[in-house]
Picture 1 (cartoon, rainbow, N blue to C red):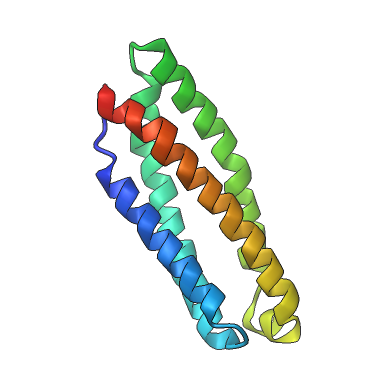
Picture 2 (picture 1 turned 120 degrees about the vertical axis):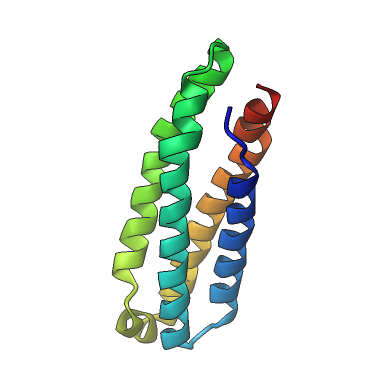
Length: 131
């Protein structure tokens, strides 16, 4: 079974970046730079899960572990698309033009990512660590 400590560390890095973005308010260039960092880290994180964590858990002889991994991997696709759309939408000029809407959408994305991380941390990763 995979060691998920790296994914846990990446979760903390993602949360830190989201927090930094939220604190920047109207500094669009700085926000955009952090969004680029977030997109990169999120891509690496999700790739690791898709290529290592989920397949290893889905191949588990324990039916609960396998089913949970398959369900999580299926559900993750929706979150990925939400973030990709958010990232494409909010260029530096778009952030400058409507900082209030950006902030609201960032809050929704942060909430979705936070909820997903919580599910992985409390459900999926403990299964990985047990097996």
